[in-house]
Image 1 (cartoon, rainbow, N blue to C red):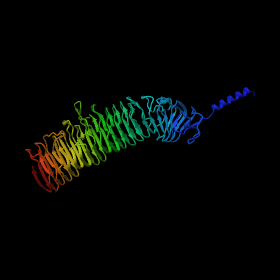
Image 2: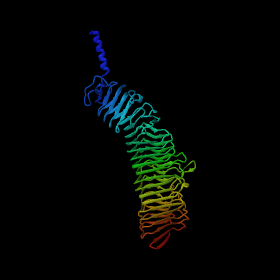
Image 3: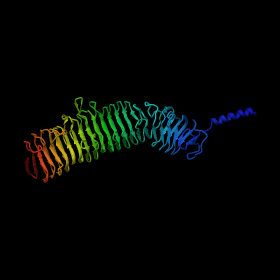
Image 4: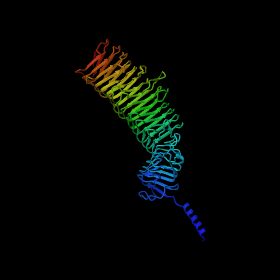
Length: 579
């Protein structure tokens, strides 16, 4: 064989060997940049033998446990695997215009993290192949190609944890179908600078998060369209100071929300429906720690809206505005149910709770009825000027507290619209009543009937309790012990309103005690006005005691031209006192 022939043969052999050589597996074993040889080995994780070259287009890359790899160049590989506790950052620092292109498979294992920091089109680079994200992996998006491109574009896998941290500026990031066609099996976190929506179609959508929800920025589940939404969080929810969650924004259908525990931090806002039309059903199966603003429906400029149904296992409120409905509605029923205890502690003068917060719109009255139930105790305390108010509507309200209603401070107002013409029927049933401070109006506006029943003990040891302001019949029935025992306690059968104005009563107002009646302190006013109607106390129990500094008065100092009565009815004995 001639030397020329031999040389040609060797060249062809080399080319053949190159063409059929196997791809090399590169291991990132040291935290560092892609373009540094000292980051790599071709032996195995745990080996620190520096290779002769960087990974090439046919090679496979594995990021080893505990290693952070940053792609700071434009490159192509066959596959990339991010191991447990490893981090792969695609584009980092000043290299946001750099990306790896993966032609075969991108895999992020449980506990591994993928950080998308490149603004190059991921469809033709990072997600050019096939993806697999394990259920407890994390995908964090710090940068993205376009506000109009959803994260799931060209992604073939469900996600584990997702952190959307893309700074969208004044615009909203369209993440259509995230959670629908591509599930989030773990936590969903919305970063401070991110604002995104998950659906703007006319379809009904159902989204379930497998983990927790944390909102530091803004998220809308459905944006500006019809279609109902069911959004469920298997874990817990946290709205931090700059966070805003909206179920349906500017839409026209119903919203259902289910979560385990929910915490809203001061400064955050929760809107079930924002400036849209529909009913909301909100279920917090554990504890709701409420320090931000909360609205079941927040649409104060839209006539004839839906109604909220709130079911909360336990409520702990300390700050913000809390409204089940800040919307106009005609004749619907708003339901607020606290299955165990509700603890209200106002911490700021701007705090308020108003379960139905809109009296009228364009001269048309809101007539939503209210059913408010507490399975355990209801306690109200905090800043004296703050208000817990049931309803601004003209619709009838019913309140049931199976445990004890305790007032130590602040104002509690039933039937208390600032529009006096929105007065309505009131039905209140309490397991017990304990007042040591604050002011409570059990029916502040005009009402054709107010029925207050306490099935246990009434203890008035401070504060001001007013059974009825304005006009209408009122009956207060105590099926246990009634005691008023401290000088600081004041109780009016008929008294002044929330604006400190007095007016005449026009119907019978009475207190019936079916247990013992003991007054050892404080003042019981039958009326603070020279009213034409009768106020009376019916004592049906075996013991009546008035002692120490206790007193009963009418018209503040007993100047009324009318009389009030005390009727004693026990075992057939009837005695009446008139004062």
